[in-house]
Length: 364
Image (cartoon, rainbow, N blue to C red; front, side):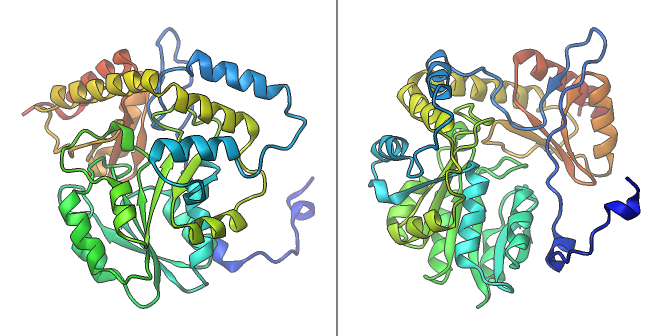
């Protein structure tokens, strides 16, 4: 078919012109005899636990049936683990699916969503698709949220505000005292989303307990995922902890049967096997600590990461480094003109990352 016959007169929403496309981490392509590591997508390098695989295999046998739209078993198991009621939990296709629904239930066209930048690149996409406007507040000199500036950016059109902690892609968490002071400044009818996709990797003593903030502030919502620490990225299960009025609205906005039965069963099995998963999480945290210490003398100001990745603030040399890393068998996530995010992965991949970084930037 020609370009002319492929054209269509159908009118699409003009807002799509301003919606950025999501850029997924590139797959790891074979490079001769070199083992190539994909460290661009913050995936858990460990395979699923045997008990989780078994639960998925059992669910496959009934894939001709629709899943439980209410995710009843998973809802109850998670609510029990978190110490909340079943009606305070809502699920979606990854935490980003929940966030899109949160924006949909709070924002009319022309309303505003405030978040730090750079942060998770899905934020401007899900915001723009509702017709709302992104208000991006620059990170501070330490690649952390500038909460005072974010509070100052709130207007009477602001309907939702996102705090990504630890921040993706730079890594630092917000602190308990500063988060409390920040939320206390905000309008009580402004929805504050605490996005904790990397919660399980946090070891900072001053990091906030988001569930405690949720209990203290009725306008707070906790957003989490099974993709990272739980290793279920391919099954897409995210959840929100929110007041029942909000979770009821989220269920109205959610794609019907969006969380499939295999994903639900895998998440339930993962909760039951959390002690085993915790061992893996601690191993990744130890690897993160080792990588950060190994890069301490590199000629870079690496932020204090509390996630399962490190941020390399390379500025204009970002794309150049990504090319060098690719030649060395590492697929990283470059953000042109800003820096590179590299996932903590297998020890061999982490060793190679340290060598490549030091070879590229030198040491002090």
